[in-house]
Length: 392
Image 1 (spheres, rainbow, N blue to C red):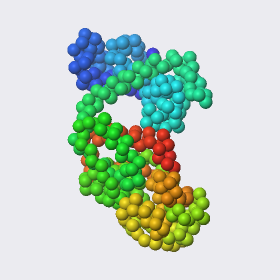
Image 2 (image 1 turned 180 degrees about the vertical axis):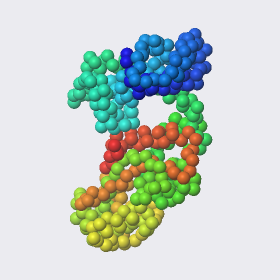
Image 3 (image 1 turned 45 degrees about the vertical axis):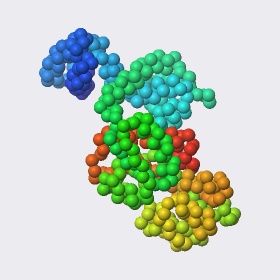
Image 4 (image 1 turned 135 degrees about the vertical axis):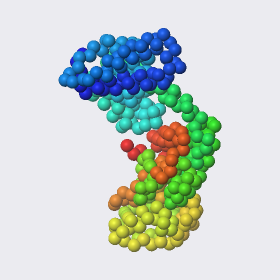
């Protein structure tokens, strides 16, 4: 097999990386006869690699004895030279097991379009159709059936590698403080708390509610480790992972029967509003909308208390407010409040996981963040977060 200089250098780097990795896991490989044989062969190969390479290099990959690599690294070597993406193969194995892209997306903590993109990319790289799609799900083609065994081996090898690395941090951090705005807390804390306790039973969890501006200050001061919040207009001090998008609604007392399903932003000046004071994100967004529409807001009163207090004030007829449907879905269903989606233009807010840029991350925080994302994704995919969609 002939390799160009660039390909030969990639081959050399792979060998060097493999030698380092194999020696690092010497406890499971190096003391075996197979491991000692591979190290001896690899050392000879590494010595020969120090020679200068020019033009094209002729390499017989049979001399490398791929069978001497441990299964997981042998599979990764195979992928390197066959242009397949290991993530695509993991997703393919899950789709094959579930028989449905939708069910696979839920189990993977992803969304249907992302899984579909992985399948399309895998079919493109393999240059053949792997799945027959129908309204009932998916069925593997002959080529898909042939690939499935290899995909499952790759998935198992990668999971084994993850377990090896994560064995150093399985217990998670000693303590994590998570903050969220009231609506987000109500939608997520139950599921997130259950999942985190199952994954990190020795981690002490503390959940906090707060306003967006407060959480940004808490992150900067190190008083909290993670915030799940509506993304503020100025988020330069935050490291954010975008999750989902909510539409905003005008929320009115139940007696306002003249309010329909939609309400134009240009008419917001006609209704008395109950909003937070000026330094809060929702008030700033409302003022920005009013400025763009060329209108003046009619602020009936300001409320910096919790969302539940604002809803009580609206229910008592003290004014109207602007909130996502998730905040008032129960009250609307019970007839205690009415809501109309803001349109012309559509008004949305993005929900994100945030950590502070100016502070070192908590040791082993990655697993916590991954679990939070997975649980919120599950909530959205299941339709349990009203009028919200995942950000792709």
